[in-house]
Image: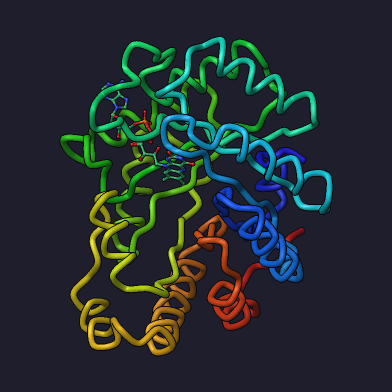
Length: 292
Ligand code: FAD
């Protein structure tokens, strides 16, 4: 089903996975998917490696989820390292196997700028345009948004302008970069609404299960970790079980506050593991608004 239509029906719970490098990893991922299926998620998504590095693997995992489960699946696609022809071919392939949802992304620029000559689209809004021009309404199209601003954006006002360009090209919904302080999300959504952006903006939730790893991710994508979160987690940085316990507790509080403030859904960055997400969901499930 198209995610656009599912979001109209009510609150969404979704999970993000990455395509594993090995067969063993893929079997573990499908074990995770089986565990998370009990929650009956609205959709799941599969990331696309920087520079097209997981082109085949993303496609394979997306296809397996589509064929072997009853889940609605969305394929991420980054445009930076592909020509227009390549992007069209990838999208045609998804259409042929019945995939109806794409997260249209630019992708991170390679540090050595090696992909520059090949680029068919420089920014995600051009990929959204390409999808709408060549495939009309076949795909429901999601895009990324950044409550704290993308590291390349000069400020939040420009961030909103760039985001609006993707919406004007036909994006149906957005998933945000991870954030750990909900006030960034609320302020961003308010700015978007003032600019007339009215698509659902689903908060991306990263449960912290490995503090050092999340510190690295956060600094790469420009997300800040509030002092109180550092204070709670730092003492347990080398104690995985304690980190998981505190990380889950913090994520539960974050999700409860978001639900109270009327978010359209919650998108969990699972890192291909189910435990933290299951614990969080179990704690918040009675507050999750029911679907119509
Ligand atoms: P864009 O929307 O094109 O914008 C990126 C930045 O470029 C903007 O913030 C702005 O600073 C600038 N910009 C945009 N338009 C213009 C313009 N017209 N003129 C000048 N500057 C402009 N990466 C992956 O490699 N694979 C994935 O699967 C993946 N999944 C993601 C999922 C989510 C939910 C999120 C939030 C991010 C994901 N990313 C993924 C990371 C993403 O690819 C990077 O953040 C990338 O740097 C920007 O991609 P974008 O689609 O937001 O780009």
